[in-house]
Amino acid sequence: MKSVDVIVVGGSFAGLSFARRAAAQGLDVVVIDRKPEPGEQVHTTGLLVQEVVEKLDPPRSLLRRIETLRLYAPNLRHVDLTAPGYGFHATDTAGLMRWMADRASHAGAELRWGTPFRHAHRADGWIVLPEQGCRARWLIGADGPRSRVASSFGLDANTEFLLGVEMECCGLAPDVDRLHCFVDADLAPGYFGWLFTGVGGVAQLGIAGRLPHQPDLDALIGKLRKRFDFRLATRMARRGGLIPVGGPLRRWHAPGVVLIGDAAGLVSPLTAGGIHTAIESGEQAADALGGALRNPRHDPIAEMVALRPSFARKKFMRRAFESCSTNRLLDAAMWGPLPGALARHAAFHRAPPQRESAVGSVVART
Image (cartoon, rainbow, N blue to C red; front, side, top):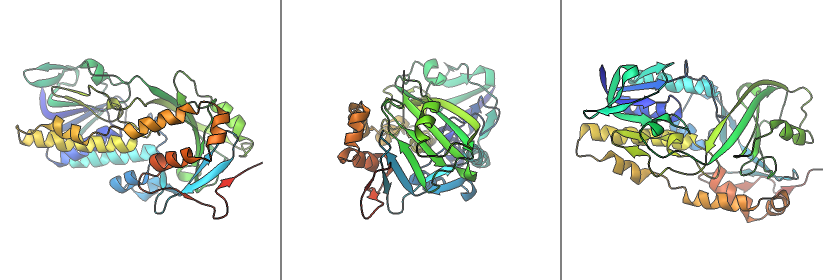
C-alpha cells in the first residue's frame, strides 16, 4: 500500500489549488476524482471576479473581460454599475480546469482521474483508502456540496441550497461588455438570472433559485424575449447543479480529515460565489498542513480557523434581499439603498460601484 502525506478527494478549484500549493512545498499529494479527465462535467458558469484572475493569472486565451454589471428589476428597468479597475471574467471553464490540473501535476501532485471515492477509515494514525491502495496522514474533502468525505467521517452536511441551471447558445448576442443580472422573486426566489457573452462569443444564460423552487429556464427566456432577440439562438450545452448557501459548516474537520471549498460550505450566502473561497481555502489548507507535517507542534486547524470567513454581513444581506419577497417590492426597492449595498458587497469586492450614466442612473426601458 502506498503511503503519502495527503489524499485529496475532488479535482476542481479547491482540490487542484490545494494540490498545487501542497506539492510545491514538497508534500506527497494524490488527488482522486471520479471524472474521466479534468474539465469534464462542469457544473459552474466559470465567471471569475477580479481577485481570482489576479491570484490564478491564467492564460488570457481562457478569459473574456466584462466591465459592467447591468442589474434588472422584475419589470426590466435597469441600472448599469461599474467600478474603477474592476471587472468580471467569463472563462473557458473546461480549459481552465485542464490548465489548473497541469499546474498541479507539474508541481508534483499525482492526479488519478476516473477514480471515485467510496470509503475510507482510520488505522494506526493513517487515513486508509483501500480501493485506491493508498493511505495518508491527511484526507482533504474537496468533493462538492454533498461531500462523501463529510458523510464518511460524520462531519456536517450542507442543508441550504440554490438549484441552478444554465445553457450555452450561439446566435444570441447580448451586449458583449455587460453582465446582465435579472432579479425576479417568482422565477428566481432568493437569487437571480444571468446572461453574458462567454469566451468565443457563446452566450451563457442561466437562472437559480432557493430549493425547493425548480428553476425554469424557458420561463426566463420567455420574459427576456422583450429585450433580447432569441430568433436565431441555438442551444449547444446545458448544465446544472446545487450551490450551498447556508454558510460555513460548524463541523468541517476531524482527526486527519479536513473539508474545503463547497464541501465545507465556503460559499457566499449572498452571491453564491464559491470559486474565490474555494481557491483560498485550498491554498490556506495546504499551507497549514504543510506547516504541521514539517513541525509536529504546529496546529493546522487553529491556523485554518483564524483564516476562515464567517460571511456574517453577507448572511444579513441575504436576509434583507429575501425580505423583498414579491416583485412589487423588488421593483420599488431596486432604486433605493438596497441594490447599491448589494452591488458593493457582492459583485464589487474592493471598490464601490459607480453609475455608468452621468445624466441618470436609472434607465427605464419600454
